[in-house]
Image 1 (cartoon, rainbow, N blue to C red):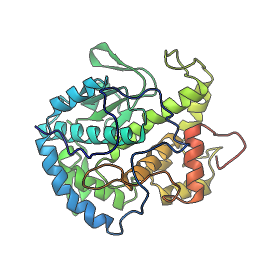
Image 2: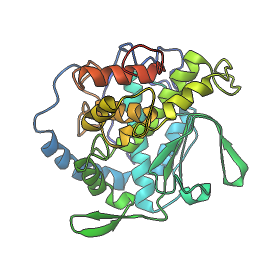
Image 3: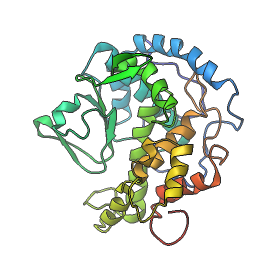
Image 4: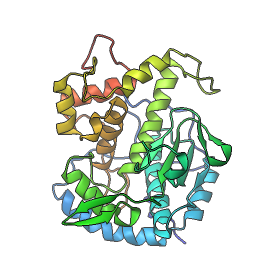
Length: 322
């Protein structure tokens, strides 16, 4: 059974995740894509593509996707929630991973679909996904490493009022929910791959911070530097309050050019901006990059500088935008 549509891009698949590469977001990697403009009829093509992807979702075998990630050395589990939800998340994660492979970016180290009620944390109960900056404990005392990602099985659905009726927030309604959220500027793109690319972006960001400044906790892959906690605290500050590093002008620029959710904190600013850049430059039918996403044409100069400085951890240094 075919897992998902796979394009013939130039990447050597030897069943390993590339480790010895330059994963810097700030420098232009050798990406397996070309340089052209976003299609003018994007919205029309996107809606046309949804029927195709829904058919692929229905044909996806989550166990096969788990086995694929196992060959890559990444534990993945899609065994909770509804059958459609398991297929949807497996399909979304697989395609987000393949986009990261095109760019030679580090993927998450672990992936799991889980009922978020198990975390006993009301602040993330309704979240679509989370990425962990440090070790994360889940039920049965299982410890997941830093840069793991979790997606919500939505066993407990919050209602969304869409087109005059209440609908549960679940994977079965996700195409429509994403379009509604983008129409109200809640998120940076309506594409259904958004939550998967978004959480992958967080893990890429954590890796960059820890590689550059050191990890705030002992970790075999990074130097140990507890002072990195100060930087993480700066990146976690809400932008809508009196943030000493981000002006009201910049916050409005982020709202207008990225999304409202991007003003939650600078971690979300980067993840939302990164997701927008990626998904505005993929082929809507193959779900692979066909244009280089970071050539500077997708955002105004201020937004480009904010995303760069956030990714590089240049917050409160007295230079730049933040």
